[in-house]
Figure (tube, rainbow, N blue to C red):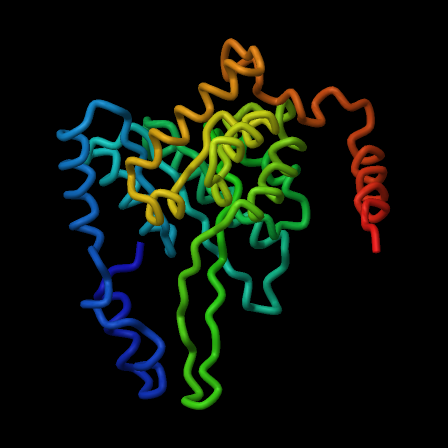
Length: 275
């Protein structure tokens, strides 16, 4: 995890670099405040607390993983936000770095560890299996890489945060369905879950959990009750006794040839268009 000191000291080395980094006051909370938040939340609620860690250096990942566990978190999500900008760095290099992050953190802490990855690896299935091999307890699909805009008049980069919408769930469902039953870690959908039906689709694809952020920011935390009640009604109407009964029933686990199924599905999608 980058500290304010890490940002301030290198920034002063080059005059042009000063505009690249946010000022410390722009951060809502720093690392120490985040650890305090975990402690406060843990004392205030009875449900498990899952902390999120986005590191930069190997030392940072390990140091803050230990501190997060000490703060009382019940589990940890490693938010692997690695944007490959160096042309000399291969895809294999990126994957090895991701796998090593999870392996080393798992060796450092005792609580469950999930890896939140992006969809931009050359073989998500192979990476998922490799993360299982080094001990990942869960996989979160997927990280959202935020895209800045450009102010063409001021020649400035304009950071912008856009909420997800239900259309983003399709990519998550696709990979949940591919991985369900084929890897041991629990699977979570992150991005695009806004309604009860979104959550049900994710579970049918193989999700053990879904993450909701944009929907709760847009509608308030009380909206979670609306989603849960909607799921219960749908399950009762369709005679599902449990989420377990529903989980993965639309996955590729039982397909004898997933690659062939994917090819046929591609052709069916193209043929579905009507002018």
